[in-house]
Amino acid sequence: MLQQTQVSTVIPYYKRFTKIFPTVKSLATAESDQVLHLWTGLGYYARARNLHKTAQIIQSIFEGSFPNSVADLIELPGIGRSTAGAIVALSMNVPATILDGNVKRVLTRNFAISGWPEQGKIKQQLWDIAENLTPKERVKDYTQAIMDLGATVCTRSKPSCFSCPLNKNCIAFNDNSISKFPGKKPRRTLPVKSLVMFVLQSPTGEILLEKRPPSGIWGSLYSLPESKSAEELPQLNHISFKRSENWALPPLRHTFSHYHLDIQPVLFKATQKINSIADSDRWLWYPLDHSIEVGLAAPVKKLLSSLT
Image 1 (spheres, rainbow, N blue to C red):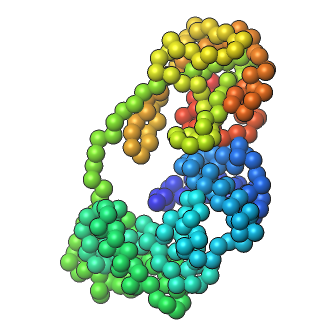
Image 2 (image 1 turned 45 degrees about the vertical axis):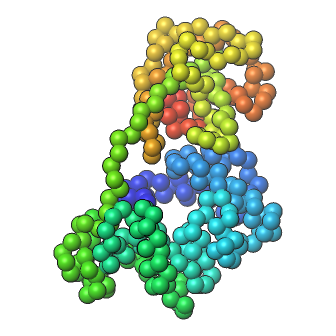
Image 3 (image 1 turned 90 degrees about the horizontal axis):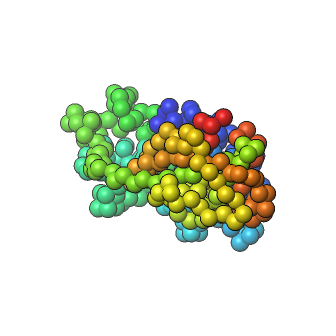
């Protein structure tokens, strides 16, 4: 879940994205590179790819009409059980249960449920409670209310317990143990991986980028050619490179949810620019003025900005 400072940072990016794609049809018919480019700044690029796929499925299979059941919605890319429940409850006023981060916080405190809410048994316990609490009538009002309660009253830090309408029955409040809930994720040391990224620059200043496969890390984004060693230059037909005088650029670390990635960028100069290399979708000569709109992997965007 986004923190307040993160929300204020990403709002302009969301506004830009929804302005360009105001309808499902406009998103469904867009090019993948345009979608990923406009998602830049929002992070979690799998969400952009899932949004794009979902729009295409709605347009082609559901004839442009949004599915109206949780069962159909959870079959769409990127839509889980809670998101599907929120869509059905809020947009259709049909009984459906949600369990987002705000609701989890309200429930763990109100019922004093210990442990990390994402653990299997605890999460299932919360789902059972949430389903029992979901009313058959005015479900839209209830869903919006419990989400807002967690977002504005039962907040992560400094909750407004004395103004909370549920405080009489809240076990954590009455036991003065609010700070214990929800339980924190067990800490673990993230492993560290490393790689070399090749910054291959043409005589006219463009950088050679490679489009990554659709699945996996940075799927469908443009990145720099990479290797485990600076000596293993990518094999490119008819292009030779020589190491720049100041070839070792400042290293950087990019952190994912499950590991750290240490990147050592190295700068090489092409002896000539071969335009034919960009004839396929795999390779692209990218200008440092960012005049070409494509989705860039986050550390690559940072690296390219440092070169200008």
